[in-house]
Image 1: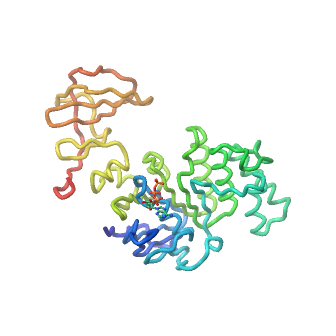
Image 2: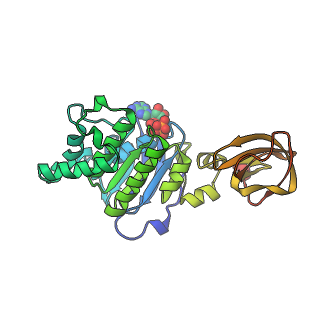
Image 3: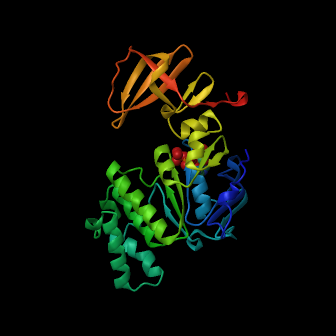
Length: 325
Ligand SMILES: Nc1ncnc2c1ncn2[C@@H]1O[C@H](COP(=O)(O)OP(=O)(O)OP(=O)(O)O)[C@@H](O)[C@H]1O
């Protein structure tokens, strides 16, 4: 499946990252084919896709751990075919954090600063500052075996931030974090990118996180790039049902895709409340109608019980084309 590049995001200085006709796999069968995309400096690309769709494989190809079957990866406008991982200007935060077992947390984060030429004292001071921002100062003297999964992730993130790369590669960097720490980490990622102008590729299963953090979203499924667009585009105009499901909650109602916020309670249409799901800031109602079921989101706590008859309004829908229904 070939998706046209977005010309509006492909102009200006050399892109931080470009993939050209990229085909990736681990053996004979490709996992991803015909991948074309361009990421300008300072922008964030979210990779969204189901388990096994190739998000990690793509990150590994950019980092240099996987050799493309064909096509090319360009970093800063330069084809990096054959360039080993340590000579690519990328900072990786992967699911298996691969922290060095013999180094303390402080030394782990200071190491890239030393390699970049900082003196021992300066490197340790800057590393301590990064640990403080990621709320892990108290762990400075510990070794990886003495850390929880979420703590290891934050150390790996601090190490990647210390490297000041041109491109950050994140593979589910908040997977082990609670909601508060997730915000701390996402804010820190955004702050560093703003300061340093680095681009980021961010793989996640979490549509809400992807839409919030990204300038561009690449939806991977079916062995390729199913849709590339801004968060608003992939949410408001998904190309098919699977893209719609991967980018947020959706109902298939009367041959069309309907987001929960495209319908509301009250209005001329009639339905029976089939299910009520309290979500904190809002409540989701699954409405049963003669033309199918539809999920409707309403601010505040539940106001209707299952079985109640309600009126509702449909304000927007994306009709599925016949070939993808
Ligand atoms: N080292 C490997 N050798 C052989 N096949 C692999 C290897 N790594 C991954 N694969 C296969 O490649 C496909 C893509 O895997 P990948 O890890 O890139 O998916 P993903 O989208 O990151 O999945 P998840 O969300 O579960 O992490 C899967 O079918 C997987 O089984």
